[in-house]
Length: 555
Ligand code: COA
Image (cartoon, rainbow, N blue to C red; front, side, top):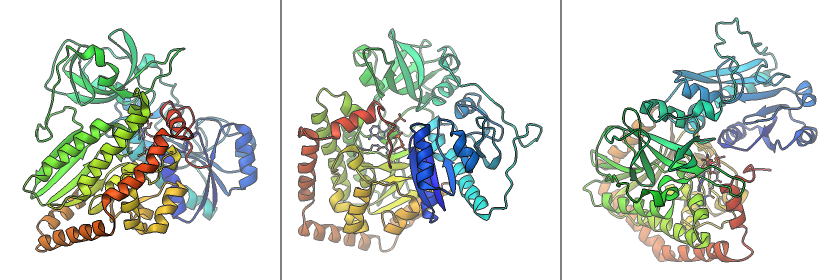
């Protein structure tokens, strides 16, 4: 079928819908819905069988929905209507939520229902929920809708609030007044307030007399202080006391004023001068404290397998974070284990170098250079590991150098449904991270060029078909399957042989072309991206960081 997507932005959900439907053989065209006339002319031009709005903040013009079936993906249970659906669901601490696919008509979210799926709510941020449970339910529903539409004999259910199945209702947009924090409230309540606004719009609050939006909340159950007081800092985050304990905030965005636009940065970077008298509360990667706290990098070990977690907000990896992760990797490589599993974060695996931190640097070119070298140093360490077998376990989406980071390991596994964007061009970059070695090695030269030039998102199904990943595990048993594989490998009677073979391949590759040469060649091009006067990278990065364009990934 010819399917037209009308989108406010080709975001994680519409990218996921795009890859799933194209995997099914449908012909999908993505149209940025900049205004009514653009939507109308794209329908005239493309002549779709079906129109889908996976993420659309505008009304579809009447001339379109009267003449075509238009399906709206709404992140709410049946009967839920209006904006801020997920925000209210998280704030109200509901136990179950859902996604409803309804037909566009003249009333927002009130059209006939084509499909709806519910899911159990997880304690996490809005955007994490959106990329996981919401995306899963939406895709299930979308595939069902497309099948129902193709068959042509389905009658959608009209919205009827007397139906016991319809439990939602119309709600108002959530405002800052609904989100406002009273620091004498319990930690759990404040964490929910921050999470229901994370990643957008953030909760507005005052710190040291200035207004900031807060993001990245984590409960803390040891540290305590006077409500509202900043009592510690760690790895870019600040710890703030609440009515019954404390919580961590990893990121802040200063409120934009007329003269200045601001963007999200690690909290300690934003508040630097104010934190001089606040103590650091360091925690080592080996600390096995099981209570609630905030940690970016940590390590677990079982049955000769070491698991290294790195949970970087938005998957962005600054110079310092890359250096910390490299140090951690080197430390755990000295352990008496046989297999190392790189676990990444649950929300994201990695999105490569940290464009926000680069933007905030006094000299973004120099910081870009430091950051790319720091991530390269980390990746070189992984590639050159001759004492262990290494596995990448991608639980969340990844892009650019973040995808390549995963390929540095000996095995790559992905959670079913994550979306990979193995390309750099949209940021005006040639790319490094030894991609010219690692990508063709897995998918062949031709495909490597296609992937990096076409700049399309790809599904886990396609990734496995291409050989980009070795296997794909379902979300529910991802960890179990991974542990089984890693432990079997560590206890494999042929372990030594496998390790020797791996090292021989690396030595052979090194003789054909040293890693250092790949790096030099890539960095020569990156140098031009960072320092040449006709580079478009700095403009594209600015647009991305300040969200000046709607970040459309396709046209
Ligand atoms: N540095 C800093 N922040 C990043 C980032 C990076 N490398 N990659 C993603 N993010 C942030 C986004 O700004 C966004 O922030 P917010 O939600 O807090 O506002 C969040 O991560 C999610 O990204 P978004 O673009 O909204 O998600 P998406 O699913 O629509 O698109 C990507 C995902 C990865 C395709 C897109 O974010 C992207 O192109 N990132 C840049 C990748 C890159 O070029 N890295 C550098 C080269 S190695």
